[in-house]
Image (cartoon, rainbow, N blue to C red):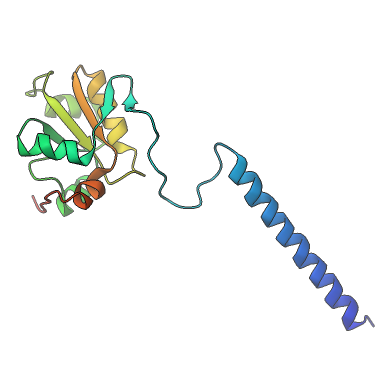
Length: 163
């Protein structure tokens, strides 16, 4: 029969080894440049573009364009999210839209028109991807609002819902 002290000592050692393994894994993850994200939000990259042909626009600067009706606002989220709430006057161009569908919906838009593309927020990549698709189609003034509708609302921007 084994002593309860021996069993207890083995359990404590196993716990300490497991704890050391977890701490080592956390430390390695923290040091790696492409480590796993512990939280869903990461600050946007420090660069000033969303690609070679697209630049970033802040919610504040986007509001100036919106107030002056100087830009077309494009919502890159799914249509269900678009219906729940969007920037007033925005059009829905979900990332799931095919190239043909995208060309059809943008056929009447002049290539030099300023376009502000947004999605949900900093974690969402749809705005960046969709803005690059539009730039590749020949639109020359495409802006990506990385903060999305979250940043727009936090900056005091108006929202509308429904179709």
